[in-house]
Image 1: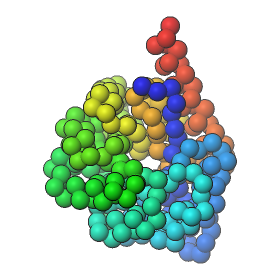
Image 2 (image 1 turned 180 degrees about the vertical axis):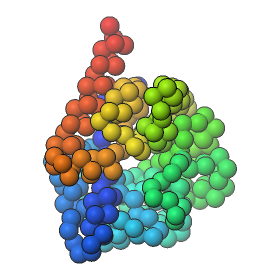
Image 3 (image 1 turned 120 degrees about the vertical axis):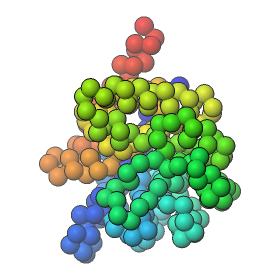
Length: 251
């Protein structure tokens, strides 16, 4: 349990906008610097196999020009492992990846894919890279992550964020239970996917979650009010939710 809640800002979709027209603008590395100035605790970037947004050059520059911890999202492939081992990011989050999907659609099957994932978890860990697995809020997946030797899990919050109002509480309860189980078995618990100003509070209030990774929504909000403003507002909402939760527990 911790009162400190970190914010990782995913800058993938700055690159999506750049790639829509080509050239170098807007620059995701510039966005990462702006995120740092606005109060982000880390930068997340997903180098997909099809290079639809972040590029190899982006990863090179992020690894060597950004002072904040870099979280490299990657598929479990030999190509991505080689890139991770070359750049040595602070962390590598293994995610599922389908070429036809618009965004990551669900969590990794750590239980069903145990044997294929194990060499990647071991190789990353041996290189001193903190390994995270992006999984659903499911006890079986958490137990598999622990058995694989990954020190960190990131809970997929998409089902909670996308739920109809009458189902959202049930989806939140799943995340709360999963975060508690992660803490009980010695895993550091992160969360992310689909979080907005309206949905972040209840997730930020969960005391066993120590980091949220948020990207698409922040980049979208930046169009209307600037990236710094969007990140500062998200940071404030997270901090207030955690402070309120802590106050309730200590009262």
